Length: 59
View 1 (cartoon, rainbow, N blue to C red):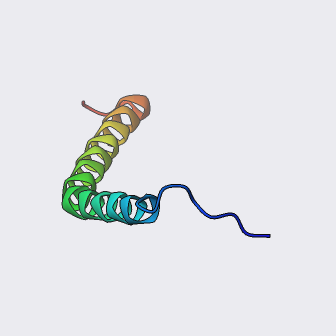
View 2: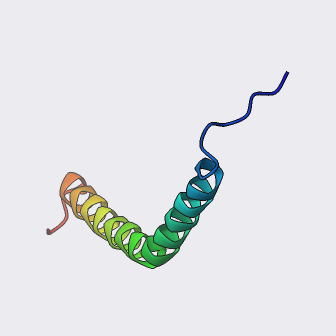
């Protein structure tokens, strides 16, 4: 047994909000990748720095 929605605009508004979410993710995706890449580079430098210290090399 199917129930009819009381609000006919609910499907339209749901699709609209999903479209806004997709556009937002698409707009922010390059910035997110840049933050991940920057964080990865800094993490790699930090790990290399500490490994030099642990091995007794010059920091």
